[in-house]
Image 1 (cartoon, helix red, strand yellow):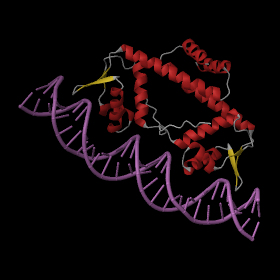
Image 2 (cartoon, helix red, strand yellow):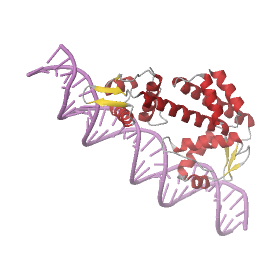
Image 3 (spheres, protein in one colour):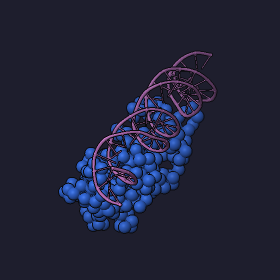
Image 4 (cartoon, chains in turn orange, red, green, yellow):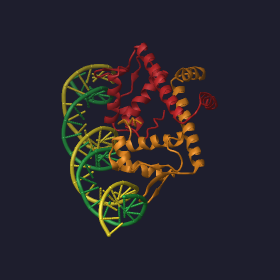
Length: 118
Length: 118
DNA sequence: TTTATTGTATTAAGCAAATAATACAGTAGA
DNA sequence: TCTACTGTATTATTTGCTTAATACAATAAA
C-alpha cells in the first residue's frame, strides 16, 4: 500500500484521511488491531511523532480506541463508519460539483467525463 | 468576491488556484489588467508578499505577463486558457472518481449524487 | 517636472509542521 | 520474573509559510 503523501498539506492530515478511507473501504475492518505507531510510521516513511498525531486525531474522531499497552483497534461501531462514508461521499461530491461549475462545465459534460474515467 | 482561504494549505497556492478559476471562467478575460499586488493583497486580506508570490507563480505558468511598471495583464493566448480548463477538469474528475471508488461507490451511485447536487 | 503607482527586493520575526533522539510506565507473553 | 512491545511525553532543531516594515527603480499621469 502506497501512502502517496505530498508536501502541499500537513502530512498528519493526509494520513488521517488515508486511514479514514481504509476504514470506510473495509481494508481496516471493525475491531481490527491497528499496527503500532512505530510500524505505521516506518511504512509511511514519516516520523513516529507525526503518525502518533494522526492516530490521536482518529481516536478523537471516535474511529479508533486505545487498549493501553496492547495497541489500537478500529471501532466496532458500524453506524459511525457508515456515517463517515456518507459524510466523505457528500463532501466529496459537494466540492467536486462546485469546482466543475466554476470551470463552466454542464451536468452532462461532467457525467460524460466520469463515465470515461470509470 | 470572497476568497475563502483556509489554513490547511499554503495560502499562496490557494490564491493561484482561485485566480486560475477566474481566468478559466472568464471573470478575468484575456488581456485584462490585473489589479495591483497591493490591491489584491488587501482584497484577500493577505500580506503583499504572499500575493506577490502567487502572481509570480501565475506568471511562471504563462497565465499572466508583466508590463514593467504599468501592471499585470491576463494572457491573450486563448489556447493556453482552454488547455488549463481541460487540465483542471481532467485532474478534478480523476481524483474525484478515484476517491469515490475508494469509498466503494458505484458509477450509478456517484451520478445519482451529482444530479442531486446540481 | 513632480507625484503617485507599478513591480520587486530585502531583512527580520513568528509560527506550525516535521524530524530526531530519547525516555518512561504499563503489560502481554515467554 | 524477565523481555519486548505498547502508547505516550519531552526537548531540540530544521524548514517553509506568513507577516511586517521598508526600500528602490521605472514610468504613467498630473
